[in-house]
Length: 350
Ligand code: FNR
Image (cartoon, rainbow, N blue to C red; front, side, top):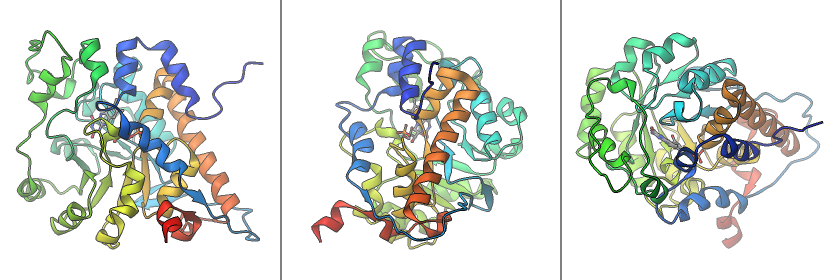
């Protein structure tokens, strides 16, 4: 009997087998020396668990609520660009899997299916990155704030990575390849990204939409406070999967060490992404103050390996692992997960 992937990391090997090197490198890679890329995952290993015993854990409830939307678990699907390079059905397959799992998916502005195509494929809860989302029934705008300019990814430069057609920008982008020597992404992203974006624009964005605005890419307590003051509905602590600026901290260390949770003080939800590969990682992020997590690369590996079923499997695996972790730590519901259930480096230094 052939045993399939037994955890989400094993989907990476399966994805590597089916993807051309250029695309595998694009999905996998991080900025420059990839120090932060490694740290995003390794920092979780330095946090240990403090299980409580003799609690009736015969029933575990993973469900939660974000911005008024019920979800089956605190595990959401992150915005990932160019998904038809992973699988021909691209974002439509990912959205269907997320909807079937009763969780929220964030659609990237640089998706390969249009926001309308994705919207009409199923009724799941979707967040998007631009105001055109409102018409198509998306429930929140996720404004990525850590990307005034594209980070430098050496593999993409070497591979001369070419972007697929970006249907949300039909007719708006010059397809002329400007940089013959390196990644074609930089030329493209300079047309899609706006490096003049600043705090005043949040007020403007709020004035043109009724949708809640979530800032993705907050990494300091200073910016967390500004985000609350700017009246956003939530923040995502994210370093863009370590693809932007090398040597920013692992996101899991930001929650506590940079006092982002303390700065927000419960006024708005804090979502989290970066390096989630296990149910124990989800548990640790929740224990340190996140209300939910988003998963990026593992979802793409599932999509590449097995299409919609692969994404479903990745979400299921993480949910199963979270359920087992909660059972073994004595937490019956996500609300039962507290700071006392983990031990961090800061605790060891105290
Ligand atoms: C991303 N991410 C991202 N973020 C965003 O706001 N808009 C985007 O278009 C993309 N595109 C994208 C492509 C690829 C290939 C990756 C790996 C990531 C970042 C993403 O939303 C999320 O922050 C990280 O992927 C989370 O880290 P993990 O789970 O991949 O470790």
